[in-house]
Length: 336
Image (tube, rainbow, N blue to C red; front, side, top):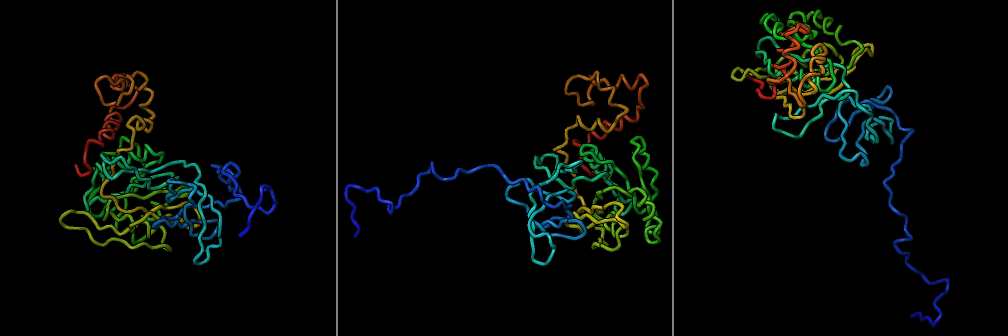
């Protein structure tokens, strides 16, 4: 047993450093200035498929991002193994600023919002004219979400061989929304594909629609090299199709002239996250008339200045009706 005398300042004595002498923790994170740019194509149980330059890379979210999640359409920065080889995994260290966001909630009472797609230029709302029957309230909700998120809406009406589109188009005529009408025969012949493609070139387009309307069938026709399983069954009792697309997926159009994002079929589209005051921005012909509105005006109340402004001839009354119909969608169910 080693013993020490009165003098214990020998060099061989081992001492434990105090906490003050240890390296302090820091919140400073690396900037990853050399990170590669990528596009999120799909998300599956925490694994993200990203396009980096001309090849696909599997990645996971870095811990430093916290609860911030990347979604389909996000532009991200990646580090790590970017070879794209089997069993390799990169890390997403940064999510770039989004230009647009399509959000939804499970229902109007659900405070938890879900980001469906990021950075899309337009929202193609696909609805069948029959089998299943059109659901105008669901279309209205999709329009509100598009206007709120900064996406331009596009109506794609399918199955025109089963019912005429006139009645539905009349309902949305005052909104000046571009539209495409297709039939099953035109889809098989390629005529409908060319017509829809004209609206998609050079843009990132997210496709939404409830089950059974032919959304994924249309996407498969637009991007034949990446076929997704389609639904061939519509319930005779409920008039609704079975979900076959279970996750959003970004697919490139031929000639690299745009992207199509196929999303899962909708049963509902909650708008709990939408601030009604932002919907007016989609009506530039009505927006100047809101200057005389009282503070926090919902634009659907007795003191709203829009009524007098429209009565003076500054805008079409039908446009004000359309605005208020959209604002009222949170008080209505999709099937009404």
